[in-house]
Image (cartoon, rainbow, N blue to C red; front, top):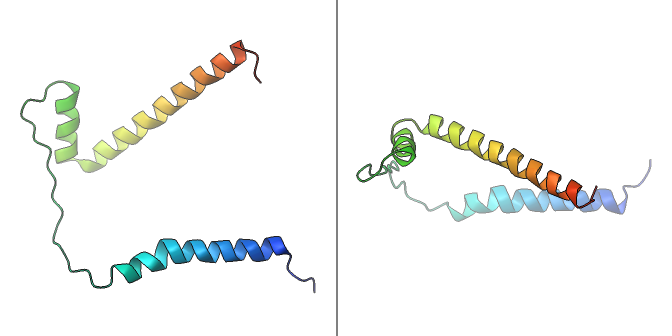
Length: 95
């Protein structure tokens, strides 16, 4: 059989380190944590109008809808910024 290369061993070590840091360490650190109860955060609607009122109402009443709209908006804005950047780079001659 072929011996594992340095690259293979390094990737295994890095993966194990990532798992240790991202999964195991937070579990160990929070071992003595007491339950703080249900997190309840409500955005006050007083003084808000227009799009701010709409978004605050969605956040308070339907967090899933708020999350989906926010995610779709960010994706759309990312596409727009990418297209504008690509157009500018084409204009100045960068491929």
